[in-house]
Amino acid sequence: MVFQELPPELHDFISKCLSISPCERPTPHQLLQHTLFQDLCEADTITHTSEEMKYQVFPGFQSRRIPVTKNTKHPLFERSLQELYYLWHLAGGDVQAELRKQGLIRTKAPILSIPKLVLLEGTVFGQVRDQTSMLDLRVVPIPLDTLYQRLAHIPLTSYYPLVETKSEIIAKGDGEQLEAASLPLVIRERDTGYQFHRVVLYDRLIKGYPYKKAAILKEAHKDIPPLYRGNIWAALLEVDGDIDGNYVAVDKETPTHTDRQIEVDIPRCHQYDELLSSYEGHRKFKRVLKAWVVSHPQYVYWQGLDSLCAPFLYLNFNSEAQAFACLSAFIPKYLHNFFLKDNTAVIQEYLAKFSHLIAFHDPALANHLAGISFIPELFAIPWFLTMFSRK
Image (cartoon, rainbow, N blue to C red; front, side, top):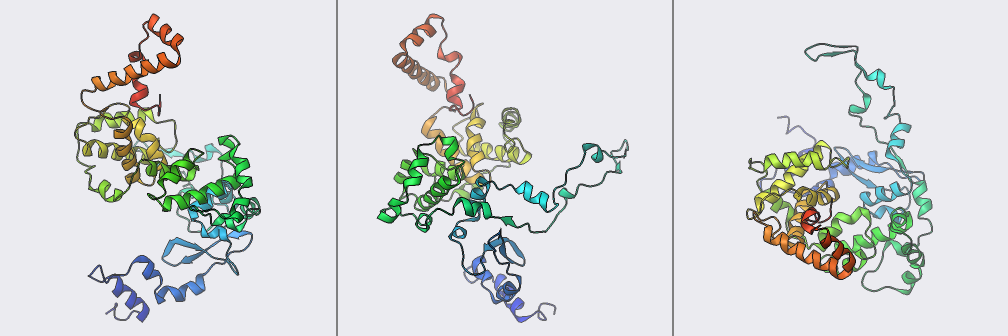
């Protein structure tokens, strides 16, 4: 009875969502075009001013925010929200500072957080709950004035780079980018204008993968913007196909004999990074490593595998499937048969080639090491096991 009394628009919307046949059930994008939301959007549209970046919020779908403008839309807002935040941060944006301005983050003396009384059972009295740990649905506008000023000199053609052929108009605007390309890498990665050009270009190339793999490799020899480093690694390692489906299909819950060793290695070896040392980082670490061990029964877990996994998990922290796919593609390409149960012959082969390289490039050093019997077995094995990712 309650369902029948609903407004016609809501009744139709719920009926479409509950369609039994997947072919008849609309996609989320189609649902957002429903008349139920069109009426509400007109009342809840938040316009964009020159001082602030605000969003059009759909009731019930607050995670989907679409930038809009009052009159004309700035071409910068055609970029993804991830790219916008990356460039805004390079331009000096600070989320913590914006939250402090709105009073969402308040600093207080540590002594004020001490409870007045703690019973032996663990009950705490007199401790005021921190407001920052509570849910707050306020929307904080992010000012974009600084980003606009940093990118004001960039021509409109730079927002739409050509990757197949380059027109004379675009070629003339590449002078500044070529000048910045001669600067040290640490400066290039912090230059808002240069990173804008690189981010837009890599976005086009990644969308053209695998057809544009050669172009991606060519640009990667110059530099890679930190924003797309994970995706570039995946492209260079030829990761494709249904990586999410393959990762979900791997049993990561059933206990195995390597679980104990993985649980010991992860917290011991990766405390240097705040992200990897977090609880969520440890959980993702264990899942990815366990998925690799389970999906490669011909190999065993050796110490050093966690160090190989660390950079891929760091770069793809929000995509375990891509981290797992990159790890699975990297090991057979650069560490073939290194994780066999008996890998003595493989390691000896690597160390022999390493000795030959030392003798070729630096004969004096090779003679000195041989004279004091300092063979590569004493120092180089961890280098190759971790592929220089930690050692």
